[in-house]
Image (cartoon, rainbow over all chains, first blue to last red; front, side, top):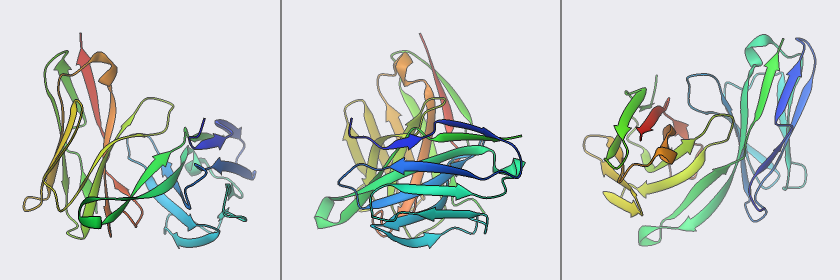
Length: 120
Length: 113
């Protein structure tokens, strides 16, 4: 299987605890994205990496959130001191740049199955 | 401020007929558009994309149309099948997809046998 994988698939935690999620991208993809999805909404961008460099962070990513991609392969997303408002599906995607019309290179993102977090 | 809007939260279509899902955007910098399909408890699955230099892209039963002047795109599914029942998300990106995706809220498609 060469798709994006995420672990764990589900996590239940108590408010105030720390949690860490892992994402393994498609092996030849150099970009990795984290999104969050809540009920009735589309996925919302959190942060992304190109290789090991974190290039952009959304204002949604509070100080309690930190993401790493130490060797440019897998990534982790940690939430410290979880709050009930952190309950959501956390999605990871990896990006593949491909040739498009008129030699414009375009990136298509492929998503993993997500980690559903419930904070009690 | 929602930059990508899917104004129909749900749509029901009979099996074999055409499904048309609509999407509007406000940011004129968007130049790459994608449709994803999502089943419950799964991540979004990429369906089809279109660059802003084209007005149509087709892949099997799926066709995406882009009207840049109206900042509108649509996904046509012909013929619709029960397995197409899912939530469909429209997403947009600037710089030929080299920026994070901005998603709409999704449209739930139900294909009735």
